[in-house]
Each structure stands twice: as structure tokens, then as C-alpha cells.
Length: 297
Image 1 (cartoon, rainbow, N blue to C red):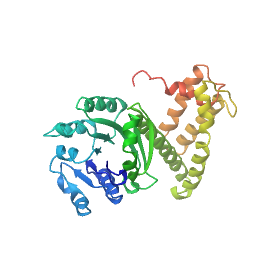
Image 2 (cartoon, rainbow, N blue to C red):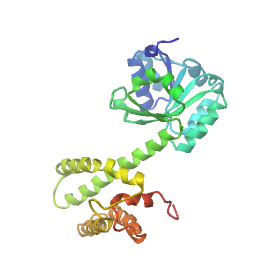
Image 3 (tube, rainbow, N blue to C red):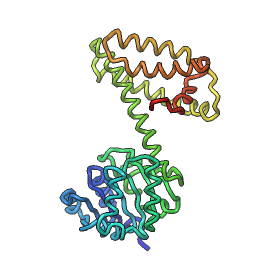
Image 4 (spheres, rainbow, N blue to C red):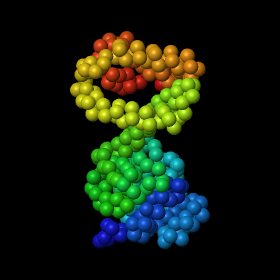
């Protein structure tokens, strides 16, 4: 049995992220086979010691573990189906780190299973330069035994987080993380646009915004308790009070000539909750608005 610390691994897909993944395995001492439709993208990795497989099928057969990181799930299936690709799937473990939906992850697992491959889905919560460091968080979901069998090898990529047997969990967490990221960035950009009208530059506003974002993040565990209990007592502020502040935000944005689309959306969601009778409850009661698909979505 191979020592996990030096177990061979294959990486299919050599975009910036795929190259970073393969590079991390090489640095950690794993014999690494790579494959990409555009073979030239492997040149640097080959110079560092990687083996370039001539076909996807040979890449799959080269290692007990294959990491796939490509554009989307459709490309995953195309790559594994073309030529002798499917012939290399039987008996191997595939970990798909391609971004997609939870439904696509579950469908891909069924597709791989019919070809006698073990399958885990994953999501990379990091940018390529930090792959191979503790700052790179890699999410995994699927059969625990398959994850644990390769945990030692996967540790070369960063900090591993196993979410559970449901193969769709990694994709769901990935999407939820994107919501957090874009919401924080949008809020900062809205605020920055506002203060710039008074001559305050982004660099001056950023530390204040960072401090506030950190403080708000500290509220999450307490708010999570309310969400899980389905009870939203106004311990800090009632939603009907918050919505008045939202109205001020809309008014101020419009007054200084800044796009008020984002503040108006925030207020519209709160207005619906108040109309439904939740005005005297605390902000997390809006989970009921977020949990309901709006007509026309």
C-alpha cells in the first residue's frame, strides 16, 4: 500500500487553479500526472517533475486519485467520455473541484458510479496563489470512507473541510460563500461611493468598513440560534426600526447622487416582511423572505 504522504495523484485541467493544485502536490512530494487539452499548459509543471499523460484515460489510470478542475460540469463529462477516458474510470477515485450546482454534483456522482468510479465533490474557497497553504480552504462532500482514504494526500492542498455524505453540500456551501463575499463587497462599494462624494477616498474608508464587517460577523452565531429555533424576539432592534434606517440610506444615496438600487432592494425585502406581520421581530426574521422563491425569479 502506498504511503499516503507520497501517494501518486493525477490532476486534469490546467487553468490557473489546476496548475496551482498540481504544483502543491509536487511540492509535497507526490508523483503527479497531469493532463490538459492544451498540452502546453503543462510545460512548467513538467519542468518541475510532473508527468504529462498523452490522453485523459491514461491520466486516470496513472493514479488511484484524480483531481478534476475545469470550466464546468459539462466539460468534466466531455473530458471523461472522450477517447479512452471512460475506460480509465473503473476503480479510481475522482474528486471534482469544478464549480457547479448541487444538482450537477449529485448527477455527476451517479454518472461516475455507473462507470465503477468512486466520486467526491468539492469546492475551493481560495485563490490560486494560496493553494498549498493553510489559508486555502477546500470543501469536500460525499462518502466519508472515500474522503478518509485520500485525506493524507489531499492535505497537500490546504485546510480540508469534510461537510458530509450528501454530495451536493460542497457546491451549496460554495454558492452560499459567494453570496457572503459579494454581499460584503457590494456593501463596501456602496458605502465607498457614498463617502467619495464628500472627498473621502476608498483607502481611508476601508479600515472603518473592515471593522464594521468584523463586528457584524460577530452577530452571526446568536442570530443563527434564532433562525434555527424559528423565534425572533427583538433583543437588540425591531425590524420596523431597522427599516426606517434603510429609508435613510436610500434617501442619502439619492441625495448625494449615488446609485440607490442596492439599498432599495434591502428595504423592499424588509418591507415585505413587515407587511407579513414581522415588524416587531428581530432582523433574522428575514430568513423567511430569503427562503421563499419570489414570483418571476
